[in-house]
Length: 175
Image (tube, rainbow, N blue to C red; front, top):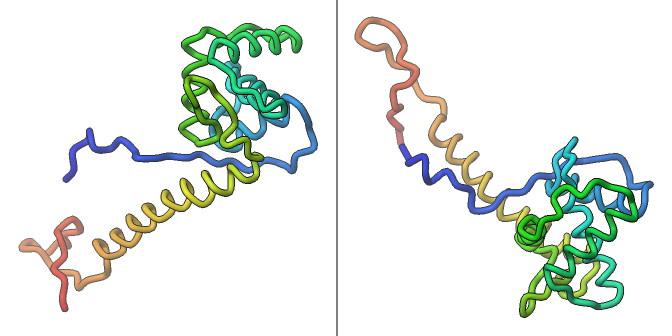
């Protein structure tokens, strides 16, 4: 049996399906964050939405931002939208930037953040999430499913000494 400390995932992704997008602006970015697991349903601390939205606006201008600039723009954005200033500490902004970077939505160049390669979100999702991350996770889950099928394949049930079936005995494979 493997060690519990080895249960740290190499990669993980959460995907949720919502209704077709009919909203715009912040609500649209929020639904994307919910859909790809950056935000949990019902979360009141949704500063990751503002961080991504600030970077999307900066992409329109082809502008790279330092984490402090992101923080200041997030604070301005939240003031304009009359949202509470939850999660706007510099340390939390950097944590949200790291989460976006771990999903390959953004990248850094000399401590400046930008949307990956100035690409459209469709391209980023296809290349980085769908084709790379999702396929590797699905492939590994398939490995586990196949190993489960192999490990728990149907074998002849053998009676134990007292006449009871031993369901947890390791089956002997017949070739």
